[in-house]
Length: 321
Image (cartoon, rainbow, N blue to C red):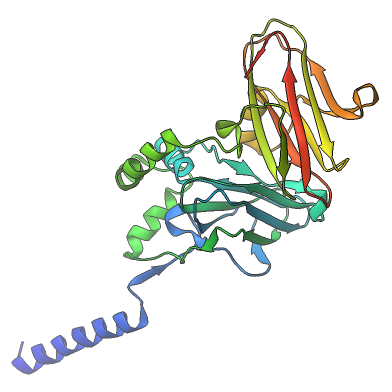
């Protein structure tokens, strides 16, 4: 090869590198295929094909201010969403694909039956909302995440060859052993220590509070989880909740099996719900018993157009907080 030919080839390579850098062709744009590829919360309506899933990310200040996640869906029930912490993502990776998000959207009549989740956290960082298409129809959805402690995460754009990007996408739903090893190392150290010491917030069954009967406020769209222990003796459990204004909150009773079913299917099917009892001042009341010992849950949901104030009491000879 002549010196002239070598010089021309060298010049061509140099120009190609400059063009690639200038156009950003060496960067893989975020596609929402997984937590490392999550998109910023979108503006307006989006389309989601049958069987598809999209990951979104947002930043949170960790100041315990309320986060409100709301999603309009058409056709009805053609999509759902779940809320994930960093610890949830790490658990999903380490378990080989078992999904245990901290929360899921549920239909809220006060928001036109949009799917709503409300909660808070005491750790700052990146949190995720995962939208899944459900049923036989293509979904159209409008996802909103709001709160004083919420800011938008920058869309992921990482320098990655096409082959590497494809491998990451392929392992999103069921991470391979290689993906686990690659992802676990950077996140395990910062995640494990704070999670163990995290205060309970009532945002889910793993963070459920104890009920002490004190009056508590619940913002529009809010939900709070409570837990109690029961000895499985068959003795009566009485759950009573006073609410002001009337009709601004309800409660449901969950067994461990109900929680497990919900975490797998996303369908809420509690064992019982509070109903108005005229003999107890029209408070909401549920009474029952179980023949298995363990931890049971009471979930309080705000309803209607006004913020709720409620006093929750759980009593019985077999009950401990």
